[in-house]
Amino acid sequence: MNFKAVIFDLDGTLLDSLKDLADTLNSVLAKNGYPTHDVERFRYLVGYGMSELVRRALPSDLQNQRELLDRLMQEMLAHYAVTWKNNTRPYPGISELLDWLDTTSIKKGVLSNKSDKFTKLCVETLLSRWNFDCVTGHHPGINHKPDPQGALLMAKEMETDPSEILYVGDSNVDMLTANAAGMFPLGVLWGFRTKEELLESGAKLLVEKPQAIISVLSGNDT
Image 1 (spheres, rainbow, N blue to C red):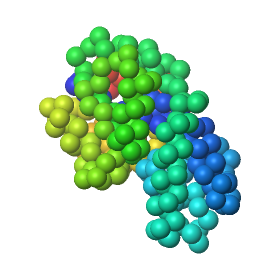
Image 2: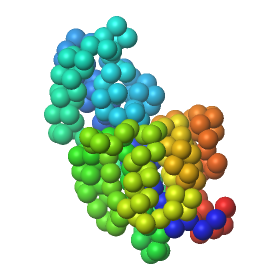
Image 3: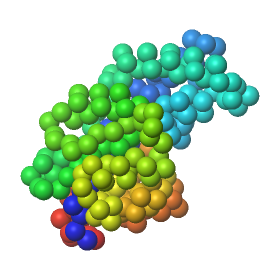
C-alpha cells in the first residue's frame, strides 16, 4: 500500500511520558489525601484524556463527583505545566524515523487525547527538529479518541484520503480510532499497552522498533 500520510499518537508512541504523568498526578493525589499508584498502573490509566486520567486515578466512590474532579484537574494541569518535561523524551529510534520522514513527501501529524495546549507544547519543545503538517490535542469541539472526528479532520487538513493514511499508536484507543476513521492501524510494542490489547482492538500490523515503520512506509511490509 502506498501511504501518503502518517498520523502518530503522542504519549506512548512518540514520547515516553509515563513517569512525568504518574509523578504529577500522584503528587496531586497525595496532597489531597487520596491513594497514589505505582508507575506501572498508569500504563492503563492514561490514554483517554487528562480529565479521564484524573477520574480513573481516584477511588471508585469519588469518580463521579464533578466538583472534586474539576478541582483536581485544575491542580493537575497547573502542576504538569512545571513537571511535564522532567523525564519525558522521545523513544529510542523516533529521531531516526522522523529524520527519514522529513526526506520524503509523506505528510505527518500528531493526534493526542492530551489537552491541545500540552500536545503542542510537547511537540514544539521535544520534537521541534521535525516538520509536522498538523498537531492536535483535545480541545472543545473535538471528541476524544476513539471517536474518529479528530483523525478525519486531520485527514481533511492534510488533503489525504483516510485509506491512504497510516495511523500509529500504542493503545486500544488508537487502534479503534484508526479503524473507525478508515485508516490503517499500526500498533507499536514499545509503548504503554500490550500486544494482546492492540490485536484485540484491531491492529493490522505490529512493530517492535520505529525503524520498522520506515519499512512499512517504504512499501516493504504492506
